[in-house]
Length: 121
Image: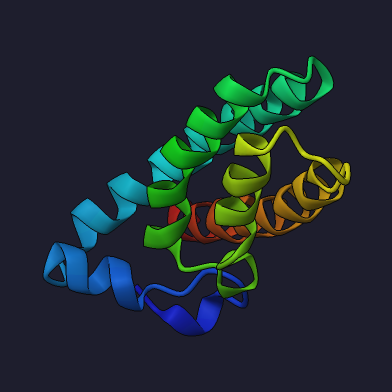
C-alpha cells in the first residue's frame, strides 16, 4: 500500500497498528468507507436535534475511526465537538466543526475509494 497515493489519509498509524498487514489495513479502510457517512449523518442529526448528550457519545465513538486513518487536519476537531456537546454548545460552534469534519472525511473517503478503484483495474 503506497502512502504517496493519499494526501489526507496517513497510513503510518494503521501500518503500525496492523504490523504492516496490508489485508487488515484494507479491511479497516473499507470499514472507514462504510461507517463514516453513517456516523457523519448521525452527528449532524443529533446536532440539529440539540441532543448534546448523545452527540457527545457519538463523537467519542467516532474518534478511533479517525485516528487510524490519520487525518491530521481533524486532530482536535472531534474532541472539541465532544467537549462542546458536554457543555451544550454554549457558543453554537458545533455546526461549523461538523462541516469541517465532513469536508475532510469526504476527502478521505474519496482517496480510499480511488485507491480501491485503481486496485481493481
